[in-house]
Image (cartoon, rainbow, N blue to C red; front, top):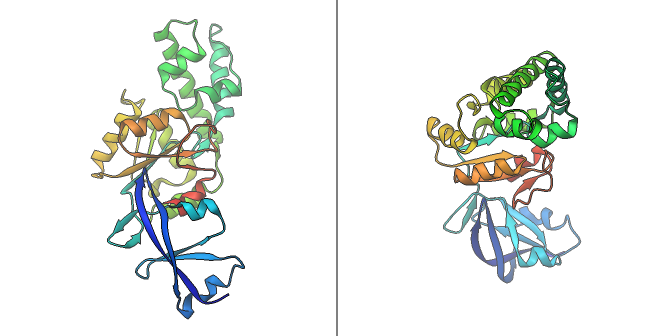
Length: 290
């Protein structure tokens, strides 16, 4: 293959956290020897986008979708240069995003149910259906026949028991969480916001040994505020104006929208079929996406 670089005239439109780059015109020009190796790695025609000697990208021009519309995980565009746009802060959900504690939560709930016979026993599916919800919603879903204020107190007992068991036995931290958080902490402020209590966030940080990598956490159940209010509170406290929330359920996406920040869906969590423009199948994908 000849040493060719493809000059691409483009149209740029911002779409949520990505920029949509559409090809308008393609012209072949000479490429430097230093970049020849990238062209020779493929037997198919390639487009190399080179912006002011910054990072450049290679695409297969025979792929119609890629030819018509190129979507980058890029962050900001100044003049004709492409460079990464840093969020000032990344905020994470816990359950279904950083770790999975369904089984131990189920065990804790049923221990309390054994002490109070009016509380119905729960299954793993029951727990999965309420993961990430607030105490009131959990009480309404799992204890519909118990007076609400009483049911909320039972939920609080179950939460305290789950904290006790997790503190003793731990929970399942998803693959690649530790390394990815350490990597991202070098580029961003990191935060945790959960619908659970502050002690739950502290427990995750302690069990994962990630305390020093996170700048802040809020368990909004400890303050009686919504997740969107917690996001705004955290951003104000940490003096940031741009942030992104990473979570796994519709409530997380709604909270991010209400707080007017971007959202990335963790498809490996409790709502894998949630329709969201930006998603990851493994937390390690954040290294390339952000």
